[in-house]
Image (tube, rainbow, N blue to C red):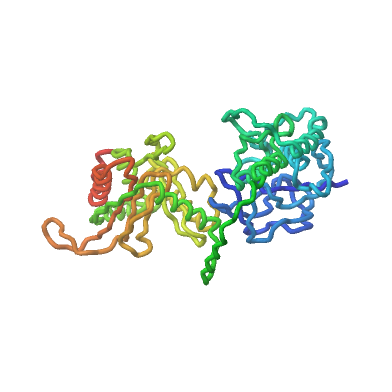
Amino acid sequence: MAQVLEFKLPDLGEGLTEAEIVRWLVDVGDVVAIDQPVVEVETAKAMVEVPCPYGGVVTARFGEEGTELPVGAPLLTVAVDGAPKPAAAPAPAPAAQGTGAAADAADAVSSEYSGNVLVGYGTTKPAARRRRVRRENPAAATPAAPAAAAAAAAVPAPAAPAAPRGPVAVISPLVRKLARDRGLDLREVRGSGPEGLILRADVETALTVRERPAPAVAAPAPVPAAPAVAGERIPLRGVRGAVADKLSRSRTEIPDATCWVDADATGLMTARAGMNAAGGPKISVLALLARICVHALGRFPELNSTVDTAAREIVRLPSVHLGFAAQTERGLVVPVVKDAGGRTAESLSAEFARLTEAARQGALTPADLTGGTFTLNNYGVFGVDGSTPIINHPEAAMLGVGRIVPKPWVHEGELAIRQVVQLSLTFDHRVCDGGTAGGFLRYVADCVENPAVLLRTL
């Protein structure tokens, strides 16, 4: 007889807690294979396909396209022939379905074989952080959970000594979210599940004790709510929401400053034309600017760093992972070229092209969008000359490049028409002062005007 198994939205990694359903890849009644992608979701990092760890017939889908689901929410159910039953846990009472000790205990068992992870992370082994409870004899351990939870609900637990600052014994992401949304520190909760596992009932009991109403006092007169502002409302979620959060955090935490300079890019454009005339793959202007940035960061390593605010330390980073701003239909993204310092101009051109195409197709992975140490922003493609970039937190600097256009320029004492570009550097004033930032920008401008300057360090 077929067993119906529930597949939940998996742990997305990178601190992500929700995802938006973009497109269902299967319908109810379809037969799916193990690890077959069943839904396409958009997170704050990227658009990804989610594989189902079960093989069988889809019996239900949860959520329409455009719906945002939290991690741990049901995605679909699959009827599987001869599927393993989730241990010997007793069936939950109808009034407690989806909550309480029984549901959490079932989550704890099923997580061992569910494989709820994203493409590229593997689906045969659950994350180590979910292996909290030994299950050599789950039938003996599980039934005790409801009784312990009921006892905890009846009698508030006495204050426990300060808990060690180690991992919290919680399996269900929904339990974590409940505690986080209500401002409850899970380290102050005593778990009633097997080996101290914190269940939903434990969190609800702790919230009940904490929120027990105080003696009634005269309430102040209610303040009338401000009228809603008329106009179209667009939710800040997905990529757009992530960009908004990151830019806001950058402006809140980083004391940034900007300096800029005009540079004669005629020498750079001439050098590029010579490279491309020699045959082989075409070299992009962005790749040449990236090479210049890498060498400049070698001379001014302060700008390839980040600030550890908790430790009050500047961390200089050993490698240059170069991000570049790319505009897509879903908003601005910053793909990262890993180990840019070890790449040639040809290799950089190819990687920029690959990541740009993946960004347009919505196929960038979280790994493609994280780990940057310095960002190059070519806003000249929008037909503008200058800008004051916002630093891509937690990096320390961003170089902005305007359009390269013919302008009057004094060259070798004579007025001439030259290819001129404006370069702007926004930097974290905590990692360096204006002298360092100006030195970096001047070196970049010198290389743009005379690419032969690079030969001294090649």
